[in-house]
Structures are given as C-alpha cells and as structure tokens.
Length: 253
Image 1 (cartoon, rainbow, N blue to C red):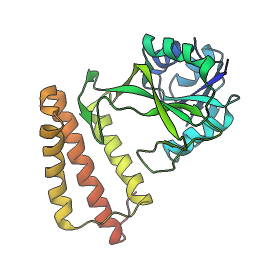
Image 2: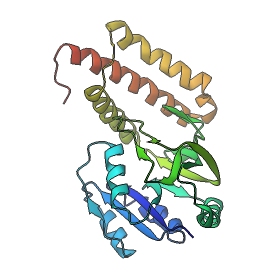
Image 3: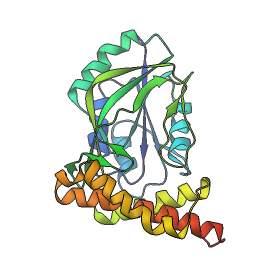
Image 4: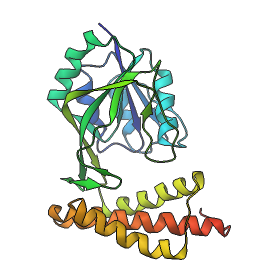
C-alpha cells in the first residue's frame, strides 16, 4: 500500500484548520503543515494533533505548496488549503485508492464546491463551482506551476476523478473579499505583463460583472451573487488600473 503525505498551507487559519485536519487524520501517513506567519491559534491547533508546522515566508501559493511537497516523506501527496474540507465519501475513496497508487503519471481530481460568506455559490472569479482541481499526485512527476495567482499542478500525463467532494469555504467577510482582490491583483500585475488602457480600466469591470452575474448564474445566488459578481468587477477594475499605472511607473505598493 502506498503511503500518503497530506500537505496543508496555513496563515491565520484558526477558524477553519480543525475542520480541515480532522477528516485527513484517518488517511494521512504524514501531515505536512507550512505556515507563513500566523498570529492566531493556527500553530497551536497543528501542534495539538502532533504536527510541527514549518515556517516559510509567503511569496506565491505555488512556491508555498511546492515547499510543502519538498518536505513530504512520501511520494504520493494530497494538497489542501486550510479552508478546504474533504467529505466522508472522498475520504473513504482515497482510503480505498491507496493500495492502487501505482502509476505516477496519474493526477487525481476532486470535485470542489465553493462557499462564500458561508453560503454555496455557483461561481467565484475565475472559476465555476464546482470545479475539478488535481489535488492528489506523485511528487516525482508533478509540481505546481509558479503563476502569481491561479496556479495549478503540472506534470501528470492522465487524470482520474476521486468520487466525493471538497468544500472550499472562502471569504468570511466583505472586507476579506475586497482585501484579497487587492492583494491578488497587485501580485498578478507585478509578475505578469498585462496590456491595459483607460478604456479597459472602465469597461472591463462592467463586462466582468455582467458575465459573472448573468452568464455564470450568480443572480440565482441572491445577495451572495451580488458579492461574487462584484468581486469579479472589482478584480477586473484593479487589475487593469494597476497594469495601466505600472506602465507609468506609479508605485503599486
């Protein structure tokens, strides 16, 4: 039977870490926690389960996750953020899958449902919900691509789906929604060339809101749909505004 390392990233994750950890305790042969400087009870929660968190200064999600993978004792790894919670079905199927983890070219997807402000949503920029990220793979073949945002694992030659689900419970307040839009767009613009004009600064938010509210179905999510469509609009506005400002050598941060 193949052994499994579960890699989890934390930063002030006290609200969610216990719920993230408890399901994986039954399937993990090792849990690797990488923390980027929590000031809440995150590290104490890890230690209460016999896990010694490793500290790494945060640069990008990909670098953080690749660092966690490099610390793993086993080649098969399951990667989670601390606000993601596996359900009983996925845990049972991962457990039954462990004896068959032979082909190191396979990446295993899982069905991920997004929650915003505690409520299930149909979409949150830039993905629809559910989406199907690869989360279980062999580290000899796979690493996360180092994108400033929206990174993903690369290197597998085929994919399979693990039955079950993971809930991604993100954005606990409106302040967090807009704070993340601000930090994500700054990181994106600093690390990627984006063509921007005054027209794109003003028009792109309108198109983004319309796309996510109407075409992606956010209107069916009620008040939360306004939040998710508003997030898409704000993200688009900040992305093009900062790209436009960067071309004029204005400081981003």
